[in-house]
Image (tube, rainbow, N blue to C red; front, side):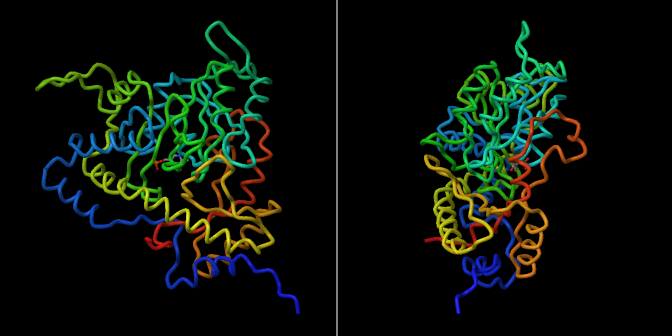
Amino acid sequence: MPSLPPTFVACLHSALGTPTAPLSLHEPEFGEREWLLVKDCLESGWVSSVGRYVDAFEQQLAAFTGARHAVAVVNGTAALHVALLLAGVGADDEVLMPALTFVATANAVAYCGAHPHFIDCDDSTFGLDPQALAAHLAHIAERTPDGWRNRLTGRKLAAILPVHIFGIPARLPEIIEVAGQYDLPVVEDAAEALGTFRNGQHAGTFGQFGTLSFNGNKIITTGGGGALLTNDTELARQAKHLTTTAKLPHAWSFVHDRTAFNYRLPNINAALGCAQLERLPEFLGRKARLAERYAQAFSPWQEGNLVTPPPGTTANHWLNAVRLVHPDAAARDRLLADAHAAGFMCRPVWDLMHHLPMYAACPRSELPVAEALAASLINLPSGPALEPAA
Ligand SMILES: *Cc1c(COP(=O)(O)O)cnc(C)c1O
């Protein structure tokens, strides 16, 4: 008798065995160095807004990513907010961004008083599609004496905000080419993409700014945290200033020269970050091996395929995902229910931004790829604990 193709849950079992406790999507992992550096930070008394761990963490982030500067902040959303402000995004402007992303991307645009303008994703990276972007801009953009505006809304087009989804690098070289045609700065949301490269260049270092997140579910964590990356020394100086209450250096006086933010990463979080960053190469190796295990386990599955990064790219494999052959939200939800019943805490991808009430009225292009992806992607448990250290 010919054997039946395996079910979704059978593939999960084949990759991960039988869970004794529910396997969450992504949990952090801490070792001795984390305890040591956090203890050292506590003993130093410098736990808050200044200290040597913040400086060390910023230097190590810059060295790892190849960005000239890194500025550590309280979380990835704050990093995006400040990057957009410094890129020139202002009240009532529009920012072109993908419809498929975590809500923080759109929230950061709204914090600037600006409006997200949603564009479709491309089928291989799930990031902003440069062709869809170019076609949409050709349709809606109109040149004015001081830049480009959306001729349908009359609002200024202020920036392009691509996102590296699940750590798969978006098509930045092509997006930057389109941005150049419309004189638009590019800010990359690389929250999920520490350790991700395209042709050897780190995600978040293609545009004017890139931003990272070190939330508890990301590839490394500082508890909560984020960073801005930039190659522009003057913009890095401004980012530091704007995230540290715009305080002018002085031995004892409190002089501040603009309304600014208290967005600086506390030293104690940076201490945790330094220890986690030391382990990033090891995490990347384990994640690549877990992805390989998933690829083998899901190769006989017929309802869908494991998502694999396109050629020329090195993804960090932050979150593994499968994609159904036929987009179908009801079928996806049945698979999710089966997986949860078996102890695998799989998740659908986020609701598309224009389906959320606060962003439903925002301008957008046609979104066929984003809609299909939203109905066909399932994230798989991907934490470091699932793949033992070599
Ligand atoms: C995690 C994440 C953020 C926000 O980071 P926080 O540190 O949680 O503020 C932004 N964008 C994307 C795509 C993310 O995954």
